[in-house]
Every structure is written in structure tokens, then in C-alpha cells.
Image (cartoon, rainbow, N blue to C red; front, side, top):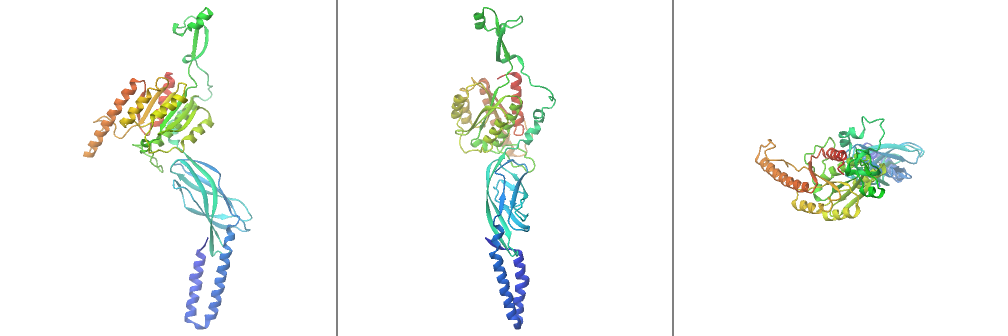
Length: 449
């Protein structure tokens, strides 16, 4: 495609139009003006025919895979080169997805001659996590005389992965992730009164009768004692609800500058990955399970850097679906796949009574084998009545009354789960990740698993 450039318009406005007026008022120069007109048109035509050569053998390259974080500034590093002995300008634009905002829509770069490579930086900021494809770059090169611009589309094959932004949560838990105060120490297995069996040994004075292994004592005809160690390789699973209720915008969210509002699922994903980092620091095995009306993603508990990358890859494309969660399917899947006792963090929404009833019914299948914590994002105004004095209108009164009724129903659900040995917590949006890490470390300290 060929388009006129400003140079051509200036030539027409300041050259050909005055000559036309001159020929109209001075009849004796009509022949000369006609010759000049034909020469100019021939020059414009030849320049237009040669304009396409400016894009021949032009190459624009991007890395095949780019990894960014949501709401954090990023740069696209382009490499380009073209034919010709001389440097010339090149107008460039990228067909970025709508969820990736660029600092400018296009830019003009200097295309070096002699087939030399050049680089350009394209600042941008992703607004939503997920997987995106950058398939084309739109270019415009000048014709030899600069009257025309030749436009073309160059194919690209670049995958952009936008991961959750963990910077804010990691800053809040910096003491854990930086290991302050433990430099120079070596990790040692703590042998003692734990819950994980280690070995058998002969009875020593002071050993409790509850630690005697009676079958081994009978076989060897002398007292044998069981020795336990503190659990070091526990399995931790975060189970995320990605159904319709997780698409709600998280209440009381105060996004930082240049950050978009977050849904409940966005907070769940961020908290799950932060808990995975904490579990890796503690030497435990970390796994994930995401579900809607079916199991969307499952990563078996392991540890290591490569495993954390696998967990992140399993979650960065997870989006809410407009379906009702199927707790029957999740419970059956867990019973079939996870036989070893593990710690489960359920991240879901149970303010719907029908969903809460289904969840409690299926929880009985899991609670005897696993330790379960249920964490909900606190609904708006879900507090006891009269606990908030900031009421100024009639609408505020009804909002607080509705919040009290919702809080009361969740309290009743908490008591039902407590009788089954399951702990339910209403957590604030901004403290979700930090509170989950605190719950995990408390269980580690109490050896509850």
C-alpha cells in the first residue's frame, strides 16, 4: 500500500498550485507550465513505483517468548534491519492486544544501511494476566525521493505471558523471603517429639509408655521405643474456586497507582503463588487445584524452582467462568488422586446458602484424611450490626443491615465447620496472602498436620 507523505503535499501546495494560477493569468507561459506539470507528475509516478523497494528484505524481530507481570512497566525489545546503503527513517507500529497498553501507538526509528541490525525499545504495561499473541508489525518506509510512503505488514510470532504481580505481597512478607537473621545457619533435621515416625530404638529410662512399640517389644522380648521427628516434607495444596462468584471485584480493594481493580480470583491466584513461595522456603511440597464445574488445573505437590514455574504457568491463564462450582466433582477428584494426608487451603465463596450446603456435604469425605482450612474474602459490610458508626443515609442503614445478615449466616457456617474440625476464616482482601502464610506457619509450629 502506498500513501502520500507531507513532502508531496507541500510540493503540490507550494509548487503546482501557484504554477496553475500563473498559467491562468499569464497565457504566454502555459506551455512551460504544462511541461513542468508533466515532469512533476512523471517524477511523482516514478517515485511511487520505486516506493515498494523500501520494504524489500525488511526484517523486524522479537523474542519468541516474553514474560511480564501484571500492572508493572515492561519493554518490548525489537531488532530490525533493511537493505540499502544509507540510513533512512522507518515508521513502526505493533498490533498489541487491548490489555497491553503501550506508551505510544507508533514510533519512528532510524533504519541503518548495509544490512546492519538496530534495536528499539517499546515501553508498555499489561493490565491483565494471561497469554497473548503478537502476530504482526505495521511498517511504513519512505520512497527514494520521499514523496510516498510504502506501508506493509510484517509477520511476528511472539507469545506474551503476563503473570500475576506478587511485588506488593512479597514486600509485606519480606522478612520471610529475604531470610533476615538466618544467614550462615544450616538447615538440620529436628529429631524429637514430632508426629512423623523416624525409627525404633531400645527403651531408655524416661521414655513415655505411649511411645513404646508393643509389637516390636513382643518380637524382641525387650522394650522398644518409637522415635518421631518434626514433619519436614508436608504436602500443601491450594484449591481455588474459579466459578462465577470469583469474577466479582474484590471489595475494599485500594489498587496502587497505575493498577487496575482486581477480581476475587485475581486475589486467590496471587495468594496461592505467595503461599507456594513460603512453602518452598519451609521445605514443604506445594500443589494446586483449580476448579469450576470441573477440574480446570491440577499440579501435584512438589518443590523446586522448576515446579514453581509449572504452578505459575498453570494459573496465569485461569479466568472466571460463568458456571456454578461443582464440589461433588472436586471431592471425588481429591479422593481419587490425593491419598497422602495433606493441608488444604480452600479459596472460595460460600455466601450462597446452596453452595455452602453442597460444600459442607462434600467436606465430610475429606476432613477425616486431610487438614482443611477454608478462607473467604470478607463480603462488603459483613460485620455485626452497630459495629460501624459511619451511617449517614437510609441506604447506609439497609447496607449495614444486609451485611449483618450475611455475617450472621457465615458465622453459623463457621460453627458448622468447626464441629467438623474445619476452620473457616473471613480475610480482608489486602491481607489475604499474608494471613494465609500466617495460618500455614502456625500449623507448622503446632505440628497440626
